[in-house]
Image (cartoon, rainbow, N blue to C red; front, side, top):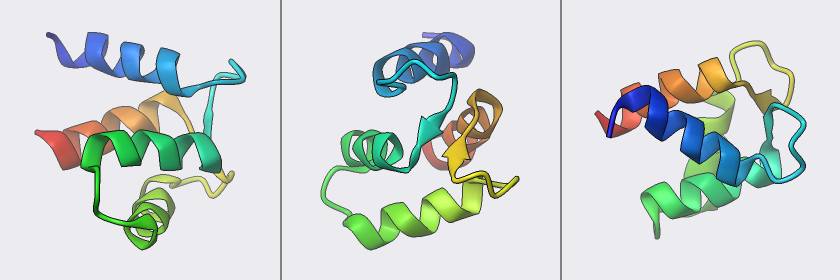
Length: 72
């Protein structure tokens, strides 16, 4: 599966309220699925790292960067 397609599918699943960003609670669910038993502290740290514009949400571009950095 191509990276952009994978990110689009992840975004579709985890942007539960369909507002175009992944908020903190949606992000925790996403990280739980991607990293499984790594813990909530890791989620907070990763969220803060990739929420580069400090909006307390993850844009699709920020998610793309996260996937590239963490999964590839």
